[in-house]
Amino acid sequence: MHARKVAEACASSGFHKGLNPTVTLWSQFIVFTLLIFGTVWTDVAGGLFDAVKAFMVTTMKWYYLAIVAGFLFFVIWLMFSRYGNIRLGKDDDRPEFGYFSWFAMLFSAGMGIGLVFWSIAEPMYHFQSNPFMAAEMAETPTAANIAMRLTFFHWGLHPWAIYVVVALSLAYFAYRKDLPLTIRSALYPLIGNRIYGPLGHAADILAVFGTVFGVATSLGLGVQQMATGLFDLTGWEAFVDIAPDGAQSPNMTAMLILIAAISAVATLSVVSGLGRGVKILSELNMWLSLAIMAFLFLFGPTVYLLNTLLQSTGDYIANVIPLSLWSDAQKDTDWQGSWTAFYWGWWIAWAPFVGMFIARISRGRTIREFVLGVLLVPTFLAFIWLDLFGGTAIHIELFENGGIADAVSADITSALYVTLAKVDPGLLGKIAAAVATFLIATYFITSSDSGTLVVNTILSMGDPNPPVVHRVIWGLKEGLVAAVLLVAGGLSALQTAAITAALPFSVIMLFMAWGLVRSLRAEPLPTFSGPGHRVAGSLASDPDHPDRLDPHGPK
Picture 1: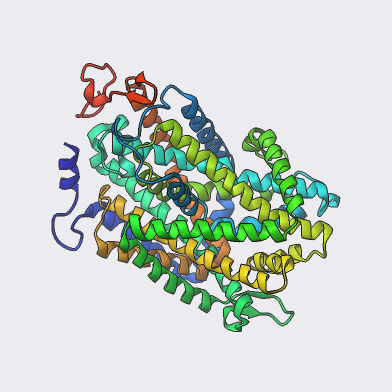
Picture 2: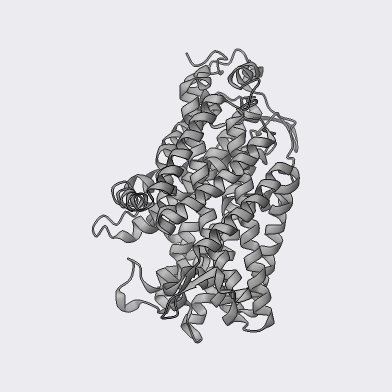
């Protein structure tokens, strides 16, 4: 029945063959409207982006904090619930990818460019100023402890909880209930076959909107850092603009050229498919990440980093609940809006993209295995990464000749390269800088190609192999969006795009969680016929179950 509905919803001929014309055309209209607006009325767009961002981070801050905290509590409950042994697929399905490939693709798609961009810059910002310390405590050991706690908080369990909500819903309904792998399917327990009508179209359009602008945000951040890195490696002033006082910033023309070049490579990758280009690049990302982490561990302040990792992890665990619910109600400073609320919005904007991608690579895993893997493993990897990069930078500031904080203040994109040079000013430092720049490029490519694949999967109503020509079109389109946002307002525009795209999709996520719970409650509990052998039913196999999903929709 669902296959017939999907076939009826997709065009059988013409340019949009294989795609849902309604979702495709409306998505294109929204994206092109915003692109034209940002290109033709650049100054107006820049002012509007600033105004929207100010509204979102002040007026809607409480909402982002509450909803993300709720998502974290929800997925932890799922992990320990009686539904943990239910498999994301048929009872005899087993995972397609091994753990290393699975974790590599999770980490590359879920964090990637953003983690490289902020891993030093964010601890340095909090090291100098944050609401949890007095001004005179800045750049002290106490400030260092607080800085790492806040950085761990923003890159810890919360973003992965957001991804779990979307990914788990999609994987469950697609692989266990045989619904199309698209956002609308998670709403089936609530609206039935109306998922194939306007309500379902709206959910998918919002997902495409969030994906395109969420990915564009990361691409814009990555290309800024790449330009600085290439200048550091080559000395070519074409990559940066140097002010009379010596301050430098990434050159706009250079960034646009880099976006065009790497978007083209990413498009070639997505054309090759999930099992080849995307998988290979994700594993390459992991190996490059391990290489640069090893450099910092071996040549950086090793003992200090080990102590900081242990202490900061404990500090995070002790403070994660208070921080999750802290809204700065008495002072209401700009800090939380610019940091926590922005991050939560960014993660939500990424959720349709990362969630669907994770769902694509997670068929056959149990709910408990899925939540444990997606929630805890990438979080711990992120902690190690932040400790090595941020901890090294803080150690240089506290106990060596400093200079990292000044670099962040002058040009945020230079912090990574200044830190690597201070760890080893010789050949090894240059090699590490080259590896870091190449790593940014590969993260750029994996973010873009994964996002493109997800957009086309949504447009094609869950087809795992959407039409190649549209993969090319949307791959180039994502790069174009990033370019326009950079021209229109730089970092502020990128942040605005992410947090604004998140607002409507967060409402969809609430309904996704509701629909998932309704469907899980109707599942017969798994039974065991022996160690390691699970025999479980499904809703489809129990027609007399009182809560069984009606193929014609909810009563």
